[in-house]
Image (cartoon, rainbow, N blue to C red; front, top):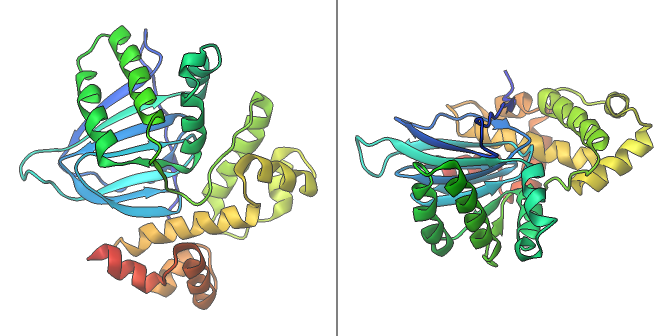
Length: 287
């Protein structure tokens, strides 16, 4: 079966405007998913691989990443730095509407806007920023709702001040302001994420968006900064990366499961996106 991202429903508690999840597990299983909320994740006492869109990298203790709305992502642990202690992740979820309520009325918080725009590709923050943010996020675990609200705003300002933040995925989402336009994009993206391993017809996507094919192509390019075909390619390669690190499936099997009928074409496209062959990728990240 092809690896498909799962839509995750994020719930916010009564009397709160955002959610903090204190996750402690014996291991982080691979859970390829997406949701319309922003997600800030601080990973502690854990080493493994991080998947954000088409990007795959190793992570370690203190890994700090901000993921934008609807960008598929997953963490998969390999070992704990302190054996016998749980893998630990602090995960903050907040909506676009909540963030806009900060950035639009208050010019003092204007720097958060560009940060959130950049998060459409996923953002990695270096050790110095992570060291500043770490104690503040940990302090929010037992904080009151009002202290949590202020604490997250403080953290976002720290992240916005990090000029060295690194984008992860090749492509991201520009988003649409009108709810009707967002709904159109969500329908198209949901179809692509569910059926990426199958032949994708532009006419089907246009029907879902209630547009002509030419209108859809312009709309999709404006929202995602890429074409439908290029987005589909990076989506397929992102899933292929995850499958290459799971088990010992042959390259041909991975190619077919990712939607490529010809392994040779899969290898060419993989090299174009990742800068290495599927075999080289597996050797580098599976060691």
